[in-house]
Length: 297
Length: 258
Image 1 (tube, each protein chain N blue to C red):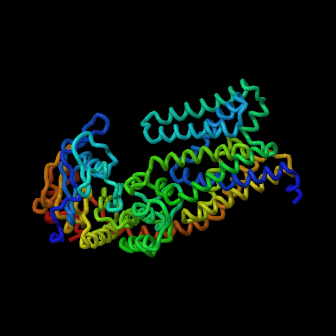
Image 2: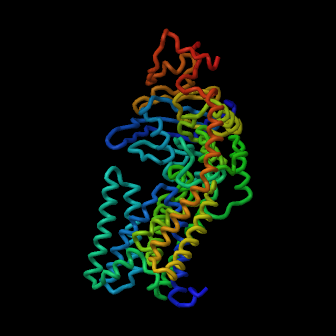
């Protein structure tokens, strides 16, 4: 337990645990909506916020949060109202955000080392101030993703249906976007803006290999997320490896291991489904060929 | 079931017009569903039947005309628990695994949008799954179900709020015969209990005996509103594109259902 001694490691581990919990917790809704890469887009946009922080000598975490939230809201509005040019608009937003961030950091007097620490994370430089902001933001994310899980599940499962149940669908969609943006900035110091999306998606994908229900997927994804962020952080203390990359590679390792483990299970399920389909075929009649009126046949 | 039909309309559409882009899809549609009535909305692809239903539940804005639900203008209608909606979908699954119970439970949110699930909620969810014959699959992932079972999950989700009015958009699309019979049975029970139904259908099928009235759309206009066209057969309906080839004058003899 020697790694618990230095104060910087205590801060790093706390930040890592919070990211391990929050990233999959919001990521599961993005995966459910088949927007797995939204986190990546938000990460790009947040870069401009970091740059603004340098330029204005304000806290980069809070500036990144503000800009990421604005970017996520813009993305949600483009998704909801955009028609055919929506993907082009998103591309402009993503790469504009990234380029703007790189530009602003240089203009604001930041170094290349600063730039890299936000792009790929820098756990050892997490300050007490950072830990405070990360804790506050993580509390918000957990409150939303757990407290409103039934509502967010319904909206992410079937938006049309959710609207007819009278749920405030637009507000809930915006809430998911804002929560994702907050999570990106929580994870920024740990895995970096370029790898944030991996922690939102990979633990969820890994959990899916074993689970049948949303609830189990949620719990398992958070457990996997926390497991890999903790072990990645500890590994980087003993070995000279970058923590962000270690965490993401560990998560992918867990995914591959579970996929291999689950393969026989999936095969058995597929065989059972095939049998059921074979039994059913004889009774299925294409709808267009079935007499549906009093015409004599 | 006709004895339960009253004159009080649960859906009342007057002169509805709607457009998708610049193309008019509804051109002055009148549509009434009275309490306890089962109305089928028929028509060829592109006739506007789906748009009509989607405008009733507020998914498509009207450019003209009025819609009332339970006597309340649709824009001010908030009592969505009284309406059960089955969207036109072929799957109940999404990007993350979910059990039959979890999907059906989301239908209960119209009764209790926020707050904890009560014993009554759980009972209603269990009953909805029982009605479509999926209570034994409650803990299974919807991803493992067949096409017909997916449709039954979507209907159970609509029934979870114990609605007075069911609105279904092509509930029989891609459903095998066994599931069609189960769905017809479910619907019969609901109608016997006094539920009003508006459903979009491509053809009447096993639901025919339940249907009180058929409304046929063509190019966004109502061309028939009355008893389901039994005597002539729906092959003679206006707008019905009859495309399968015939060897003789009589319809194809399949021998499957005779």
